[in-house]
Length: 390
Image (cartoon, rainbow, N blue to C red; front, top):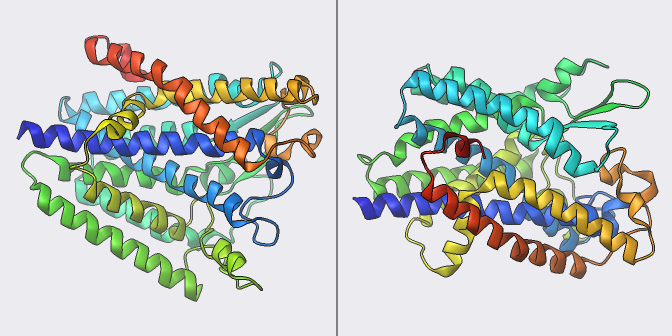
């Protein structure tokens, strides 16, 4: 039974590590690829398949990690009372929101004036934990119903808009909101349906209990994954429901592929979550017995995701400053006042997709030793309470 438990944990760490590594690819693209400053990589009329798939593969990261955060919360709860878990989730959620607005925010912009505050992925994880701190007091069935209702039904409100209403935007609409003449708020990750994704992960955490048969878990996850992706394909082809950005057919197959595989992420539509979480379930179903050096490599990142996340943002941005200076563009251009893709002074800058992949691989290789050291420290100092917040 101990061996099974270890394999189970490694499969979860493996997926966490994979999404962490893949996520960095998109962030490197943001800072290094010429197209990032010219057009949306998912625009069928301007993008290419290599550019699109460099972006598309990273779509799986945020849903998978949010789901796994909920699943991990359930596992932590097996070592705590319900009230202790609730307090932990509340404190960690508040901590993550604070980090998003300070340390993470500075990493994106390197702007001491803090002219843009972003409510992005770390914020969504923090808010989701705060909500989950309350939800765990409900019966598990109610948590499942809550999750499915938000995931499946929130697109009914796609055409509901309240101009200038920041509260509604926080709930369900991506927007730039002007706070003052020099300061703006980027609401990139509205809380609905992200809070439901983490809650869904918490619900499925029970399937990793020692009393639950691993073969049955594999079967359940495979069935859910296949159904989710099948429903995604049917709804995407028919445009019946589930996404405000409908699938359109263009003049070429590559444009059709881009349009078909590009459901809305901000906020994540039902189709986006069917596509990404469907793949998440399939991976979890079939990765429990994977072993080897490659698995161990990715698991290292998966065991220290927050530590890695902070480091990778700063490293990528620092390298972008160096590349800009070496190329004659000037490092000052990377002191950003707004989101990098919308920075008007960046048009005309950037490198080929090959350079993006080289920088991405270099980033991962540079960070691996640091993550390995920190992972070993965490494993040998489990008595230090503050490590659970990193």
